[in-house]
Length: 184
Image (tube, rainbow, N blue to C red):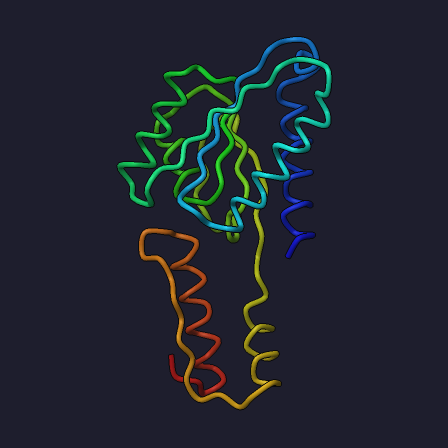
C-alpha cells in the first residue's frame, strides 16, 4: 500500500512542476489542497506530497499550502473549493472524486491536480487544466485471496453513500461476490 501512494504522488508532482513551470523555483506559490475527513489513504498521499515539495524546494522559494478538510458532503466540498478559488491559489490539489468534482463544478481557471480517484477513466472530469492520477483495486483478487484463507458464504461491505468512488467499489464487489455465490 505504501508503494501506490508514493507512485501517485510522484505523478502528481511531475504534473505540478510541468504546470507551474520554472517559476516554481523562484516565486512564492500557494497551493490549495482539499482532503476530505480523516481518510488514512488521503493523509498518506498528502504527507508524501508535502515532503516531496519541501525536498524539491529546499532553501528555495516558500510554498504555502492551504489545506481544506471539509466534512464529507456536497455543500462542504463546494465551500472548500470556493474558498481556495477566493484565495487565488496557484494550484488546487484534490484527493478523491467528490472533492475533484466540486472544484470542476466551480469552473475555475486555476489548474487542478487530482489524486486517489478510483477508476478515473469512469469519472466525468470535464474541465480545463485538469489532470491527475487514480487507481483501480483488483477487487476480484481480494475475494480470491480471502477465500484462500477461509471458505466464505457471506461478505459484509462497508461503503460511504456520499463518496462516488466508494459506491462504485461497493457495486463492483457486490457483483463479484454474486458471481462466486457469496451473499452480501
